[in-house]
Length: 213
Image (tube, rainbow, N blue to C red; front, side):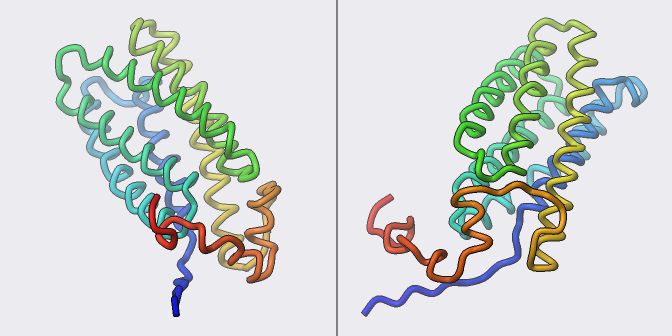
């Protein structure tokens, strides 16, 4: 006889989106010149906790069998760590390397958005992240001040969308039903509105239950 134990957990996604919002505000403020000159190391130190928080969120999301959320949060975690280290250490060629990293992350966000549409809150964060990281890549690679400013403005927009997603998901988790519009559809909608039979459908094919990944 095979026994499968399910362990309910609180949704880690509000924490993940709040971390995105806070880190985005700090980086955007630096890009917009709201901090005094030489503040890049201080900003790096304030962004590093986002790496830790989103890594934790990614681990719990994998445990909750949500590969899209887990992959997004884990990759955001790596981005914050890489960006913080480059800002803090200021190595030679750091701007160009960050530009390439931001460009690859923008492409990653496009690919993620193409499969995340049923999870509308997460999809909106991704759709906002694509231009933000694409413009940040251009700013890093060219050094154009107007692109840096545009990246900062888009960073604040990303923070606003992430804050809304975090607050809406937190309210939903606390009250047991949708309070603010999130726009789930398809499997994401059934996962919240469906009964236990829907949740357990195809469980034998889930990673951790089937023999191989």
